[in-house]
Length: 615
Image (cartoon, rainbow, N blue to C red):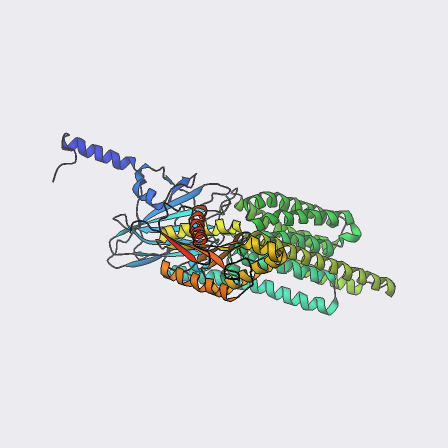
């Protein structure tokens, strides 16, 4: 064995070694041995801002001492609006003589992307997860509305936990981070579930009761109250992660679209209910229209979420929500000053909710810290508000009951007819908007004629699949298919007949390729792309030959083709050399070249190509 510093005295070498250790980031391992009830990791973790999103886990493990880690010192991590990715790390030590399991909970159900690694003392990754609100719910190791990661610590050993937090387009929410034992997590989850069950149960009971009351007495304010309460119910159910867990666990994109859209709808239903409750159409029609206009701005600002833009949504929505709140507050103060008892009840109820909403949005914007008051302020404020408004509605109904009905029946019938027509118009416009949104979403993803995914989706999905295969090491099989002599077919039979051939071929593709991982694309004209959920080139050749034969067996007449029927040529690529094939465009070119070889070999055949790296 040689000395590490052969030309220096031992003491000087020791001092140099100590200086190197002091220059590296200090990470004091946290002892999590029993007894252990739980720990807030917010102030304990170290942070690293990845401005260009360039770091990988390998970089962190190999360049750890060179990276600018810093201590968090935050009770709750809050990066607000940021274009960076953020890395977190903490060391845990099991000083006991028995293996332990601890649960790390990121208690923010709306976080977009969460990647996590557990590293042992030798620097080897022993566990890893990729999950988040923009990934399927089943990527979570523990089926819970928040993100819970199980960490196993052998006796007397240290584990380093590394997290990477990223967003879709730069909007972080406050990120509480807890380390819990199984028992403490179960207690915490049970307390939260009981509290939320009582809260949502109370909202549901109010909705059902007031809906039945509306059906009995036909007071329009009750219906507005039910719709307003129902929109708020869906908003809170989605914001707290329950909707993604129980309603649509396989639709992460839809889940993320629902939250801003529901906030916009909540603003609209709030304006409609307030206008109806305070009878603003009679007392102040311009103010009523002003409320609906600002509420419409909130809804309009949420529409970019349909195209995947979220940070700009909240940059516009928060000021619009503040403007709507101030306008409603002014209306309530004005009507209360005039002695309107309903407005006075409304003012108290609205102030309570307004405080809760203000605390929540200020927490989202990073102005206020995360704590139990800012996190659950909307729930507490809304619960009190809805109870007060229910009391106000009961008071209003009692007033209407005791009022003298001096108006003529014809006037009453005319007014009722007008209200029904207005509601029908609102419903019709809502249906038209929903239909338009559905058409826009479908147009953005699919080719209109065939219903297959379009070229834009080809680039997005294949790039993502290449990234996943690069991580897993699995080979990727992709084929390009081109209908033989299709221009001649159009010249002979007409473009309408050609379109019908494209539809028939697309339908046949959808019949043959129905595995969960199969993806079908129309890349343009008569050219199609097929991403196959198979593992070997032989399997891929088999399924492509089966489809080629099925297409030929359709026997679609084509006098210009050699066989007299419509056929196609195929180029199939099997790739696991992702250095040579880094993206979808390169993969397409490889398959396209193989397809043209099939064309050169007298068409109606499958030509394969293997792009394999070293194994």
